[in-house]
Length: 441
Image 1 (cartoon, rainbow, N blue to C red):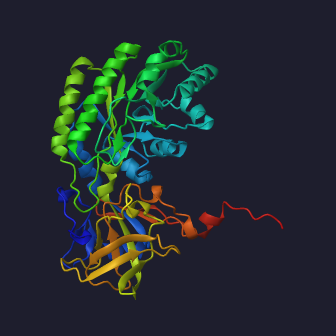
Image 2: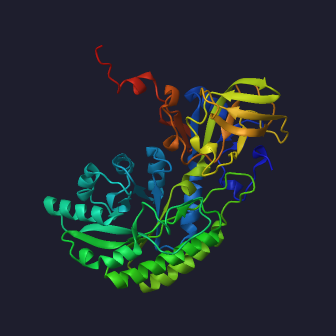
Image 3: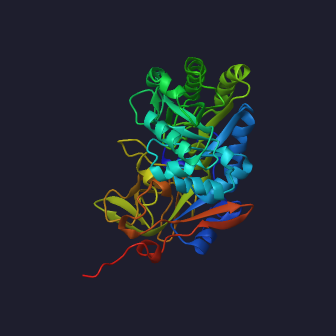
């Protein structure tokens, strides 16, 4: 199956549609109209897809489970604000992400802060931020937070311990637990330091957090993780005397990007999670359960739109050179893969089922690595055409080298209730040079 023929279950959640003219539309607005108004390259978000993705999951999951948006997947304040308005909390990992969530309208009590390398400035602000909890990832971090709370006169500062479980998992595109990792505290180390935990003066340990990995595509793997994390939390709570005010059992719901991948069976997934949650909830009815999701909530809603500048041939190979590339979409190089695989790519200008062109799609950068797709099958391609990389609402600008060659970051546009809104303007020269200082020579 070629990338232009990419089909997966859940088509109703795909961003946009093609009108009678064959042009890509989002909520009835043609992509060429959006490109004329806001320029290219750009990220185009469909708020209706954000809503339907969140609401489907919210309707399926046990009511005891809270859904938190992991801002690292897409920190755009409008994306965050819209999901927050639907009921999502926020999982943040930097002060800018913290302020983004706050300005987007997500309450501090629905926000958690995590990360293995929190610096002093972050910890000092977090102590007085009124968050639902700080997620602590080492004993030394815990000691520093307790001292800061004493210095600031803060009592009962809520802290969740991120554990690195001793059980193993499978199926993750990027494992983040169950083996030696910089994340969290090994369960055995916690057992060995019970006296230290009981001696904390101002910190109140309120629960546990575990995150096993990302981009799981088999629901059975996620259900297994959920069962194991909840069982571990129950046992550790008894062993360490830690109340379970909160258990964050991670997320890692995957999105199918590549040929021969299939999206999660979300109904089977929810049923399995709900069985585990119901059993745990019967024993711990007052525990707040958190499932943190980034990619799953945002990926489907986004399309990276780039304009064709040149179509050329080199030694028998067709190249389509566009005005945006891996500087804006490094994820399209191949997520966690040593083999180049294509995201779903299609012509937004003239979508047909007839693929006339087999090409290499590149960006404008002076490096042979600036390849968005190889052996991409597209309809006839001409300069001025718009090409879309689909499923691009997660880890786009936030995980890309936007300053390479000083092109800067692209515009971001959200279509909400039939109107296109600029939600991040593209970088201009002053954005890139304004922070630099020329010394006298």
